[in-house]
Image (tube, rainbow, N blue to C red; front, side, top):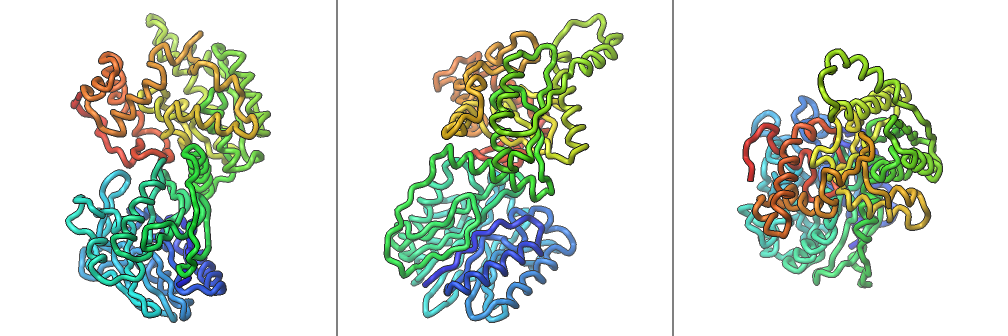
Length: 540
């Protein structure tokens, strides 16, 4: 059996555009002689649709789109993801569904059984658990159809049912899984093991078709795969790019495949997420402040890949405190990347603001307030440029800084997308070296010099933070793994350092709630996947 894989980049809410993509892929694959065509989960509406599902006409429009798609199908069936309105439940209740379309009609539908509610998922808010059977017939074969999470409870007690266990008790010739599985570092290996186990358990080939593209903070890597009944990888589609190809179950040749390095996958993911966030939002140009530091340098390099050098604008905004080497590094970066570059001095803006505040502040000592005037002056200017030229302003803060609040509200946090806000500082350094692997893009001095916000003379991050290797390790334990203070101390860190970092993380929840959306690349990112109260008193 030849399975057509329609690994396509859908846009949330673009029902008409997604339908056009689906029809085009169907026609291409039929012309190549496939037996069945499979699309990702919720393809027609895009994933995740979230509260669009509650709009009055959304499910109706989606139903009309599905009927239009079905009407163009011939004898080659297609299995496509969509949201199906429930006819016997509350007004906006629906199913996460897949439709088997053939010969101009919808001949059968399938409903997702397991609805995830962890991390970024909140599917029980929108969907009803399915009860329909898994099976359909094609060319004398018994085919089981599952949707994403349905295969993830294998040998797990997270849900009260296990679709794979149920399917394994029936004779199954092929298991298909329509998926919209968001990427994070290491996710490829986790999926690989899940699919291998499912193939062995059900004693049949498994075809897994995953979404591709960026939608808001989520990045979908594609990498659709087929495994034979022994759990061997049989065929694989592209990662981080669209793919319309064929997985031939009759081809007995073995697919030798090794996943890309984590750092290369990270680069591809960030470029894809940035490009799709911008283009799907209508932006063709990117703008960012270039401080001469490593974070803005990495962000600029990624922006050039996503937009093209002609569509990236870098602005240096030196103050009286800015070092000459940082200004030189910013200029050298812009030259290396071949982007438009301008320098705008902020001394007059800072001095005017300080002068206006002087009557009120005259008896008070210099502190972080005056430091932040610099950052907020830069934010003001960058937002003005963004407005004037219609360019997407990119914030450049990393996860380590965002975690402990080393960022200024309405200053360096200004912008439409926080590209590396889920990338810890040590990983930023690794990414910078990786970006320089084939040629020097980021100045060597930018990578090697001590990090500094340069908001006061001779300032260094190490003045008030532990080294970034220590900081990132503590943040991994506290933020991503949810460990207690005592558990982290027992890992070998000093109590004083741990308590200081934990306090900073907790104190700065209010900042993160006002931050630009960021691209998720870790198992637990700040944002929709981590929902901490701003005002809370638990300290452990």
